[in-house]
Amino acid sequence: MDSAHHPVASTDEGAWQGATRVVRAGLPDAVPGTPYLPGPVFAAPYHAPGDPSQSPYTYGRFDNPSWKGYESALMSLEGGPCVLFPSGMAATAAVLATLVPPGASVLMAAECYYTTRVMATQTFAGGWFASQGMQVVQAPTANDGILHALEHWSGPLAMVWLESPTNPQLDVCDIAAIAARAHALGAIVVVDNTTATPLLQQPLSLGADVCVVSDTKAMTGHGDIVLGHVAVRDGAHADALRMWRTRMGVIPGPMEAWLAHRSLGTLHVRMMQQCRTAQVVAEFLAARAASGSVVRNVRYPGLPGDRAHVLALRQMTHFGGVVSFELPSADAATRFFAASQLVYEATSFGGLHTSAERRARWGGDAVNEGFIRLSVGLEDVNDLVRDLAQALDAI
Ligand code: PLP
Figure 1: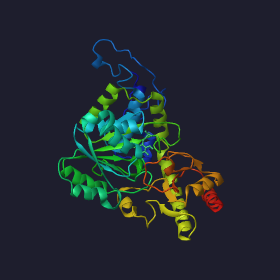
Figure 2: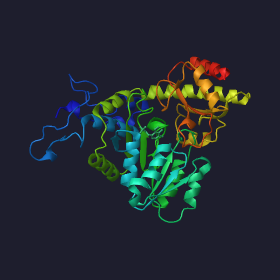
Figure 3: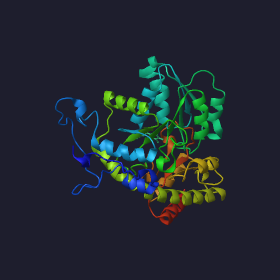
Figure 4: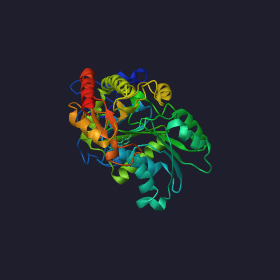
């Protein structure tokens, strides 16, 4: 097999900083005449005579060099083996399906991503998988709600599902403390790390067993890919997840894997800029709120007065690119979007274009009608603040 299609982790990777890792991780050795990042490999069958175990690749549903390249880059960031999936929800489904035994209980953050809660409570605990008998109990993320639920837990527990910071309310939980308590109960801990990315927060090194990320968001950052991954500490978990992917056929496209690997190279510069701008935007919105304008309840883990700040400081290196705030009503939000020139009204977050949405339009989150989730992009910070100011004035 062509070495360009066998990404080899450099022996120096262990000492690299995040900025270096995102640029270089998962790239093959520098073989003259080969590209830095070999293009996507499109193949269903591969040449594979005789004993299939002698061929590195045999069939496109089993493995793919473009997945492997991105997975090996992710491993360098996450600190454990990674398995790529075609979306964040495919990654979430694989974890719930393979790592929770039949009839077992899951303690889940009550404000984690809405579709994750729906999948757990309506799909795995009811619906198609009702016969599996999964029990889902929810506890609040803020104010150590999950830790308290664990302290009072009686009976067996298979998994604790966390999200920190949560989407869209941006609450934070103490991953290390929860992991210690959950492990004492024999449960594994999963963290949905989508809002932070492994660059800002490393759940596995904080004690979590599994980390789930929607790469659709900041990981790829250009708003053009849907993808997800799972990082684990235990190789047996990675094997189970790969087996699920192969058997169920929930496989990512080679093109998406390659685009994600290419986009990863700018993750550090994108995230650092988005974090800097988000801090300025959050402070601007908080000042507006303090002066009695239409803005209320600004949430950003980087604001010193935010209830998530102290914990976020301890377990995150930076605070991310998402800010939330409230306007008085759905109508006020409509006027805000109509007046803004730089804020795309769109769902999702983490991309290079600033976007926002009124979350209550979807239902499912305990937020009021004027709650806005704002994803800060890469536009000039002064342009952005000026645009936000005039859009808020127009309300
Ligand atoms: N987890 C979080 C925190 C999310 O915000 C999302 C999507 O918005 C997902 C998981 C699901 O990811 P995907 O849309 O890639 O399936």
